[in-house]
Image (cartoon, rainbow over all chains, first blue to last red; front, side, top):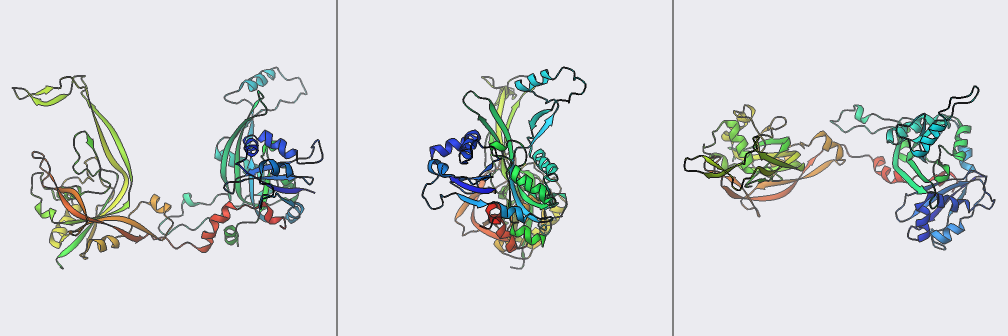
Length: 265
Length: 263
C-alpha cells in the first residue's frame, strides 16, 4: 500500500541545510526512514518550496515510513505544524479514470540520448573510443550518450512527447479573452495547459573526491487528462524520467484549479 | 473666456531629449518635455526663423501628462579629427583662424542623455485664434518636427486637435491614455493614475525652461515659470477583472497533492 508523506524541514537548522544542499545526502536520509532494509522498493521524492521559511519534502513510499529522525534532526520536533503528514495513496489511484482531469506537478530531469555530443567530456570521450571498434555480427549497437535538455522549450517538448506513454494528455489551455483593443493574434493563442514554473541545475558530489553529478531539472505544473488509467498509475508509482534517486520524476495530482474548472465547464 | 482654447499634442518617439539649460559636454534631458522644447516645436512647424520673436508663444500655458515615463539612455559620445590632428580650440590667432588646442587634445568626450520609449501628452492653453493657426501648422509643418533634438522625430501625428475647455487639468484628464500596446498589456486595472505638471501662477514649484529667443548668435537664456504637480486618472479601456481571475493567483501556488487523498 503506497503512502504519500510530507515532511517540513527547518532551513535554519544545520542538518537541514546539509541535507538540502545535497540530493545524495537527502536521498540517504529518506531511505533511512524505511524499516525494510536494504531498501529495494522504488522511493520517489521531491523538494517543495511553496511556503516561505520552510521547505517541504514530498515522499512516495511503498511501505509505511517513519520520519521521526528527519523531524528530530532537521525539522521542528514537537511543534505545531512540525509533524509530518502521512496519507494513504490508494484513494487517488482508485479515482483515476479515463477522461478525468487533474492538476499536476512534476519535477523531472529531461534528457535525450545522442550518438555523439558536440562537446564531449573526458568520460564521454573514453566511452566513444571504447565503442569505436566495429560491431561483431549480432551485437547490438551501443546506447547513445545521455545529454540533458537545457532550454525550456526542449524540456517542455520532452514532457509532451512522454505524456502519451504515461497514460495522459495535456489539454489545450483556456486563455482569457484579450482586452478591448487588443487583437487575438498569435501572441494570445492558447498552448498546452502546462508551464515550467522553475528550472535549476543541480551540481553535487556523491562523496568527497567522488564523481561530480550535474542534473538539469525543470518543474512542470499544469493540467492533464487521463487517457490510460493503468499507465498513469504506473507513472505515479514508478516516476517519470531519470534521476529518481535525486528527487526527480515524482508526479503528483491535485484537483483542477477553480479558474481552470470554470473555464472548462 | 470663450476665446481661449486648449491645443493637445501627443509627444511619442523612440528617443526624446528635453534639454533645458544644460551646458558644455554633458547634455542632460528632463524627465518631461520643457516649455522651450514644445514652443520650439511649434515655431518650427510655423516656419519661424531662429531669430524671429516668440513673445506670442510665451504666453501659452503648458501642461504635460506622463502617459509612459520611458527610460533613460546615456549616449557616450566621442569626437575626434579623422586626420589625427589635435582638436581646434576656442581661441583665434591674429589672422582670425582657429588655433589648435595646446597641450593637444585629440578626443572630445560628451555624454548625451535621451528618454527612450516615452509618451507624453502636452496641452497648451491660450488664445483660440493663435492655437488654430498652430494646429494647422502642426499638420502642415514648414520644418521637420523633432522632440527636443533634431535626431528625435516624433512617432505618429503630433496634434490631437483643439479642445474648448479652459482649464489645463480638465483638458489633460479628458485625453485618452496614449501609452503603447506593450504598456497596455502590462496594466491590468481599469484605470491608471498618471503624473502631470501644469503651469499655474499659484504653483509651488519653479521650472527654469522659458526661452527668450532661439537665436544661435546670442544663445538662449532661460526664464522661470511657476508649475504645479498633480495626478490625473484616466481609464485604460480594460474591463474589470472577473472574480474568478482574482482567486487564481493564490490557487496557482497551491498545488496540494493531499487534496485528493481524502485528507
